[in-house]
Amino acid sequence: MTGRRRYGSLLVGAIVVVALALPAFAADPSASSSAAPPKAAASEPPEPDESPGDDGGKPDKAHKADKADKGNKGNKGVEMPEVAITLHGTIAMTKDSDGFPSFTMASGSTTYSLEAGPPWFWGANNPLAKFAGKSVTISGETSAGSTNVDVLTVDGTAIRAPGRPPWAGGWKAVGSKHPGWSQEKADKFKAKFGDCFPPGQCKNADTAPAASPAIPRGD
Image (cartoon, helix red, strand yellow):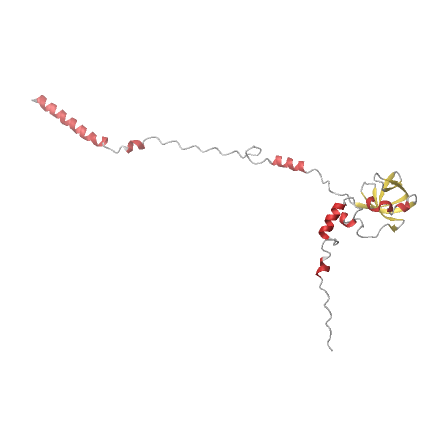
């Protein structure tokens, strides 16, 4: 009888233990999934290095400076200032490679080339030609360090009128004397502008109001 009671007590205890354990097994299964370790976040691509001198970064300032130095070849278009000059000596005349008269004057140990305008404009009528072989005093202008002299006066007399030189204006103004002139250019220019040069100078004449005709008076 005592053994049966002991067996019954053990059975009751086992039932109680099972009853207490059932709520834990019946819990929400999502709780177990939440305990799983989080996934690693997607890695972002590294930012490019922007340090100077990098091929993928900003331009190197020193490289820019090198380019600037290469682009600066010097001011080739800068003209030297002209200075007044006076020479005394004998004018010598020869011919240049194009057959035009050319003139020189020796003064001291220096021989100067004398110019009175472009040789192609004067041809054989250069105003210096009449002084060839004569001892004269000339005044003119030259650039610093140059031996080319633009003659303005001979023995105090101006060799051309002051103001705009007659060879200025290009082939359109000078005509066939100018080395840039050609008959084809002249024909095209005449077809476009006629005899109006500079272009537009005839507009005033064309648009000027005509004189009103006289109104006869009645007797």
